[in-house]
Image (cartoon, rainbow, N blue to C red):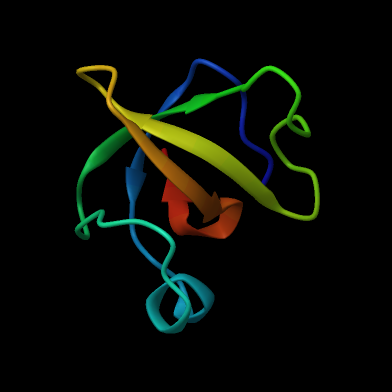
Length: 68
């Protein structure tokens, strides 16, 4: 699934994010996709950076873990 910068998604982790988690997100949390300066854009190698809706940076997740 392709994600868009600035869009809000629900986090539902796929096995890759369950076994090799780089975040402390819980299933069902709402997150916003962001583009960090100096980092690859969203969808590069099917990953993206996300933040909580309050603006706290969370980390990188697999795009397949995000649902509309």
